[in-house]
Length: 582
Image (cartoon, rainbow, N blue to C red; front, side):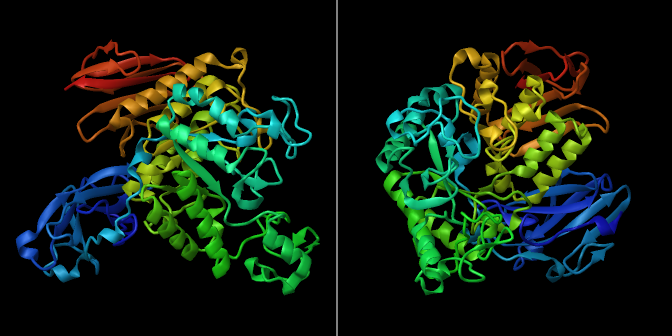
């Protein structure tokens, strides 16, 4: 037993309350090192009477480690616990103090989960687990009202640049809600809608006003109501890290310098405000002079932004916020932001834009989820570009599953492309088969799935601004077969709880192989086996199985051959099998 590989800490993703009565315990061991791991659990005030052994399951693995988990329901909402490791005829025990060859004699030596306090239980909105989001870049989705077009607007479908406009607006979204309903999405994430000078609107001028080129506050209210009638939730983009060049308080500081009453609203290193050798004398987003960083520790700034968060929920009934550059804002502000938002709408979804490990924002006191770019990168490396094999992909996913509490995994925002990245089909080298595999994995993986507008009809585009082309509405230019695939895959996800559960297990993911086989299960026993061939050549798949099985898409019976499910998958082919009976 490699003791150096064994790790546990009594907090965060290693020991946490999943709900008001259940504690999840996790421990790490060297990959393949243990035959079994158990948790020894009991109440600290009645140890001898309540002591028991809880077998742990290996729920994830990566290149170096296995991760074990047990769900325990303590009788009195508190828990003392230790771990028991088995390797052949060898046994080892871990307490908070030490490794031991025998069970601890004193429960005081064990780890302690003091109490499941309801206020400490991280409970993201339940609806998010079942959501399929659709991201809309408003300026490029649809022009429904030419009367509000900006000056110099170009004909729809032209080549995008960082500065041109094509007239997309809120009426255009209203006009195409049937498309979203047909696709099957039940949530929309909008890039910024508030008044700003750019086409992307991340340089906010007025946080309380819809950009006139998009419409009015009343038009947004109409759109949100129309979405809600169709069962579609609405998430808005909040740019609270920085404002825009024309934000009135910043204009005042530009004019008056240190004498401005708003001077402390920003992080100014030197007055007057200016740019020296490409570096502003004030903090900004990425040295961008038109995006000055807001001082969220200033009480007036804090009140202003929290009032903004409150306003759009109370007045327009939005369902949550996506928070831009969330990792550069202080944690104290986000805690107050959460309290404000949840006091108005407890099931509002708070989504942070963070591209790296985010455990410190996902403790239940700040965000419900983050944009899951580590998932994105792993999926693209395997399905889109073939940079990694099946084993490395499964390892990357295993690391993700182990990195966060289960409720975080269940509401993670899983995406394969956005306004900040090349489009999925472009990343796939134009190979629709690769795109389908990546999309199918996303739609059969825990968390909420997001589709970037136009991916469903085969749009392409490189880095910004290439990924921000106008939505293709001409049906003759749409990939109808791909659109039908998206419709069918989304319907499959929505109809089966197993495809949305947190229970995922890789059955085949071998080094050097491009074949991936994984299993999905629901609490009620519903079971799927999904096979994918991410290779340019066909591949034979054979999976041990029992009971009766059917093709999940067409319902046709899939016979077992010698107790195995078998298929010959074409290049970039897949099969989704559902167990009909045991």
